[in-house]
Image (cartoon, rainbow, N blue to C red; front, top):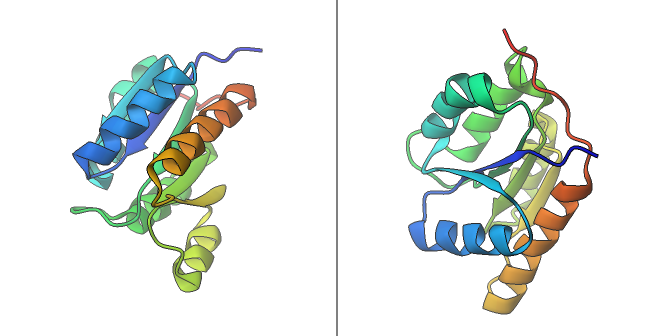
Length: 142
């Protein structure tokens, strides 16, 4: 199984992003790209990722500046090239309306960030373990 993939972490909170990256690395993820908002993530996907990385697993927060997670998700799932990307919403809210909207927009999974530090670390590692065993789609090149 080819598990050479990149996790695109889209998270505006630097402390949370650092914690997530640390636990992804501990779980064996080799390639991580951090985007501070949806616009940075889209720029990365349309630029460097398109040229260099063919398998991307995206972790996407909802509450961010510039483009929030739902706007970013909508743009990705409407894009004929990017729509195959697996997107996991990783966010602090469990508002039923937001959960419903994310699934309607095409997210693959919705995970609420635990408040407890140890539970949060464990959740991130479980997501990384899951990504490691997934057969991720090849992102078509234009």
